[in-house]
Image 1 (cartoon, one colour):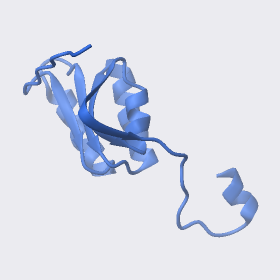
Image 2: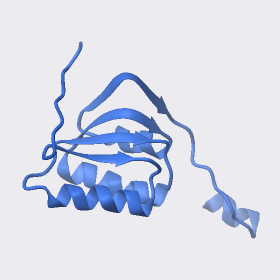
Image 3: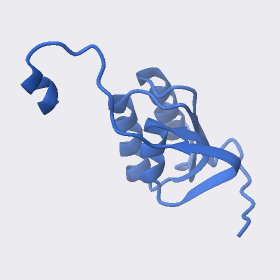
Image 4: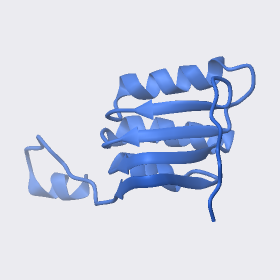
Length: 114
């Protein structure tokens, strides 16, 4: 089923590029600055920080946002899974995988617990 979704300056916010504290902060501030809560989150992201992404998930759940994915890889895919309604563009790419841990040293039991 094809759906036409018209986005304008007041009905959506975008999360473009890597999921970082900065990109999520921009999206959160943009959402909260609109006169009415946005209805749609546009995702075009290769993924990124799990911790920053969790902040975005909190907003998506709190506002009951729908999502439109152009690219939702890694953490972007996790965000997409929490959307009230999910759409993808023709040619959209989605990618899911388990969390990876980088730059961790110390006792292997601590790493496993993390």
